[in-house]
Length: 471
Image (cartoon, rainbow, N blue to C red; front, side, top):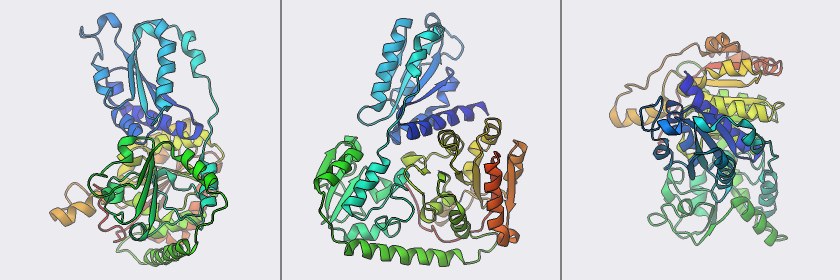
């Protein structure tokens, strides 16, 4: 539907800003066009992504008189955006756009909104020069060197996954809760004490805690309940890491702690591999699928995560190859980002192998983007974990309510849907287990030849994520 396309546009724009270091710009029609961006704009707000949303509006003289698609758009976006403005004359366009772009990038980055009544939109030459491409600069590789020089073991969450590469000795992937309870000093570099850290309850009250964040409200979130920072620094995390690594240049931290954590990491991953070898009651073991696909992914791969249970497993199994090689929706947990993020990633990195890891529930939000991938020649590979269920919800609902009502889906032929849009599609079931690697390699070959591919993998149930309730 066209309204889903509008949300996909915002997700694409957000992804574009990740890779270019500039403000992403999206323009949508008035009224229902804007209302259908609300979820995506909220996602950008919570992910601290700079975004300029330009919306049409009824002609100035007709506002409030029952004009087509005329609603109070400013009230809708003020809670979501750092800056909202309605342009009332042509001469206001350039200064308003400049101010909006500056606000979007200053302090804690976030979305901004400008409303353009239709009577101000015709002199295109006035704004044309304001949107010339600019080259972005990233701290990713610099931050990686800073962390490596410090020698402190790191847990990476959200889109910081991959910052230390695929196999860094400092990157600890497993047993985070235990490590936080044992640590003498914890540095929360942009990490927020929300549901992802059990609101701060996982932190040891005897530990010294340094927290760094651009946003004061995020910096101290829940510190009045479950935890207290020893030092709270409001500022840019990347700049902080660079400065502290320079200040501690030549200092070597004891490595026994990092080595012990790494040994625990290896033991947990060994247990995960053993669990991946277990047979499920029907279809394929999802852990086995994810492990084997991860082993076959190219070293320049970018992973887009869009789903619940299957993606939650992928976060433990798959190893992003470098900075910004793992893209997820952030703290808002929005389903449906997959198509837009994949499109943005492929256009910014046309030579990279772009994978979208979908749950079968989340796929429905953007499977139509296979039409876009085909028409615009942006080949990606979609890996769909198809267990015919909203499993993330079911894991919580069944123990509490004793019912699976409204969680069931069907083992739909999503590969046929992709084929209908001009892409390639493969169905992979238990009978294909021995050919899984060959099918994945075939998908990679088809993708290199310019075709978008969907792997519809039928998966069974495991207890790997039992008890993983995120509220």
